[in-house]
Length: 322
Image (tube, rainbow, N blue to C red; front, side, top):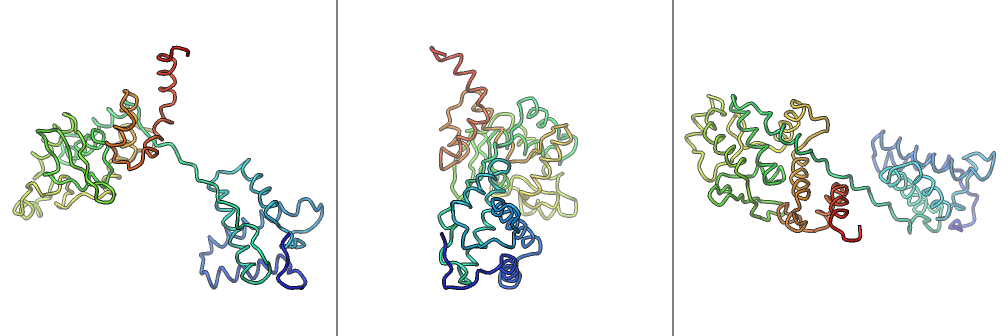
């Protein structure tokens, strides 16, 4: 049991909360929203703690009697009805409060010090079925220069599984149509060579032909004077500048909505779609790891969760004892 640092009358919980509120507002300078969340989490915690004492008020709680067992009991209750992210936030509020009490001399030891924050859930990646992916690729209108560009973007994202930052960072010298590979500059400026399919190369070739028409007339002459050679960016906006990751995300999402795809679709979703379809077709997980540029196989292994039904069918079909 926790003891007060010196003999004294235990402070009322409402008094401690008032002092803690002042601390958060003045010293920590937290926003009104954050402050409201902290206090709400704490009141929920104290309401749970006071339950065993029948009609006792929250204000009668003695914080020195709250040990790690009671905190664990509260967290166990939360696990039955809350996501790990919510539990982590509530625990952070409690930890912050008890650290404040320790600093203020209200406690001799912090009962939360050995309580670990729950690991966050790893959401399964969003991916598109093959039919939806093919429909998305056909959505941009090739009668317009921007449509030709957008179709090339979608084809390259799906063909190569690039991160959106890798896509917008491409220069023409990074695309080798003869060897059918792309040089991608990934995280930490690491480079890797990724195969690119025939359809994507055809889309890039058509895009390069109409590229001058994409640029607004007022900017076209200046951009063409500088040249669109090997060191020039592949994907440009109408002003002749390199396309941004935000612009790519906006156009991918827009085309997905236009073709009736219900799930929110981003460039990262197309990267996941690339990996998922390869795994469905029997590709080796380590090969997919290399193609995606993952430093750890554990990052790639999340795709096995998506394809559990497929893996179960393979198991049932191939295992002699299944």
